[in-house]
Image (tube, rainbow, N blue to C red; front, side, top):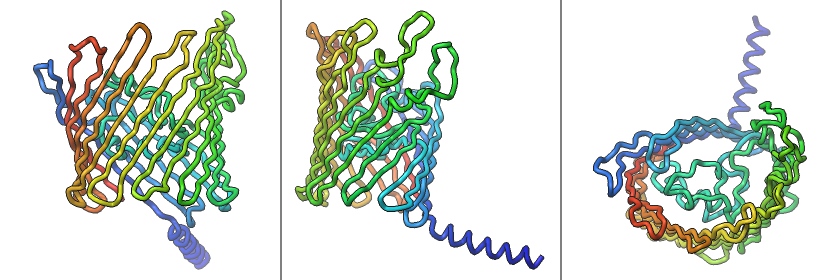
Length: 421
């Protein structure tokens, strides 16, 4: 009994030391649509609960290790106020940094690990997007979730082709970061079963995938921070075009170089040298490829610009603009896409901020084809108490063929809570 008591005391002391070095934190988030309708409908609808998210994070021993676990649920229509098909996700990761020059991480970080969009990405509207207070079109600017269902009003507001390297997104991976000298970071990302759920040539479905498929979707990036000047980033994201060619029983290529681009090459620069102002420039080039019929595909170019004014006063302003041009799909020229958003903010008090989020998009194609869309999204941020804040506002949006004036103007009233602990 004495030995058992002694062992218990020692174990408690060791556990106390371990947990004393741990830092825990979390976040709870709920987004709703209170009301919605359009200028052609007679009825006003209740949108219901749209989005839920819970996060837990921990760091251990002076950030030598840690991780995060996230649960989310919602509906396919979370960002247009409808109650489409429901979904639930769970993801997480752990990292270990035994020495300052090396870090290893395993898992999924859907918040966009290594993404370089400092202004134009998720942070443009920040947590207002997850609370559904702000219209979500950030995927075109640097978000990782390009698989998201395209709603009618998002159908060209949200397109793959972001000008800024988006990071790992929802990709399960093991990654290694090297810090050779101060201000330099090199990241290597290797997917884990990223393509495992696709059917193989024998029409079987498994959870494993060949090494060639894994490595063909690799990512590599390098960031150089220039003190008091800015940050330069270059990146490459594989799209599977280097994987081994496989065919179905009919001899049709279903995976391999003839079905996918080798990948995207990115370059960007974030300028911080001007006090109270930041700017960023981004460029992406999609490596072209030919399909099984020898027709050209890919080769598009994306350019992006972001601007932020914040001198610590009551007024702040953000702007982002992006263009996707050139490129072909099965030998046919792709349409040109143009985007621009502004986000002025006035801090009425330290606990009440007002935003006016607006955007315009234009798609131009052959034979005078044009499609345009716009949205106006005023909203407020309120800090109710320490760690508790909410978002609310009103949204108006419309997507249409330019000649078609019958497309309805949709409106909705969002409301969301965030709680941090």
